[in-house]
Image 1: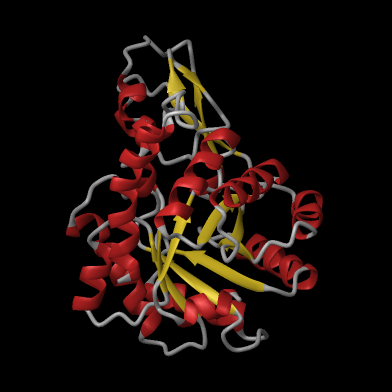
Image 2: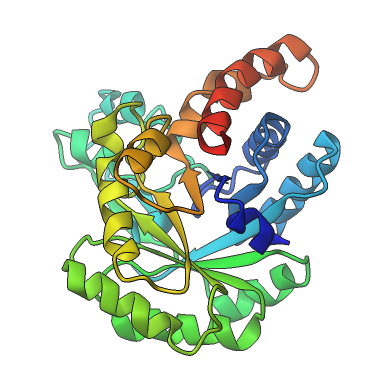
Length: 314
């Protein structure tokens, strides 16, 4: 059971991205990290994505893995997609150069790969990039996905729109009996505001039926250093200090240094969720068209992925 994995205190969660719906990329990522030892996978709430992940697990002959699907609210950064204004764009290539997901090519956005991280928006000197929110209608997407025997549903409870957050949280609670996860960061909230939101969301749930994914700095884990992961550890400490009956997972800027820093700071975590950094270190292998036919490509990718997984498992 997923509870057993979380109770082990050695849970590595691969975050493929709530907005990532590149089915082939996800299939390769899940296969690769499953072979490397990962047993918990965070996916977009898409039937095709879930099917691809399950197929990858079968190919890897991994039968003790767990799948979580993530959903967000309007304007949550995880469900936003970049849009380019061609009346302003001069095709300088700056946005393409900073996109870790390979979602921009020749000044065109591949929506199925865009995760709304904001890097392209920050670098654009022409203010030609904006974002549109593409949150999913839960009543349309979740019933079919729940039937696929997923193990967890995660709500990205970011921002200040508490009416929408609690409305979607109620829908998920009413329509799914398994483990739920709350992914939230301080962001525009105070520390007290973050804690109060979590307490309100879990007050009617059974003890340890909820994961709190403490998101330090969402989608910022491109570098493998202590500074990048500092906010993830700090946010986790805020949650830990409340002694809530939840499983605590660190995310947001997480990397190969997260476990070490968390232990130095006495964070009693159940697991670490790694997305941007985990995808970045294997990107050139996952993007290789010969991925499935050249075992050397997979073996070289495993040399990058396994030490990262082991940094959490050991």
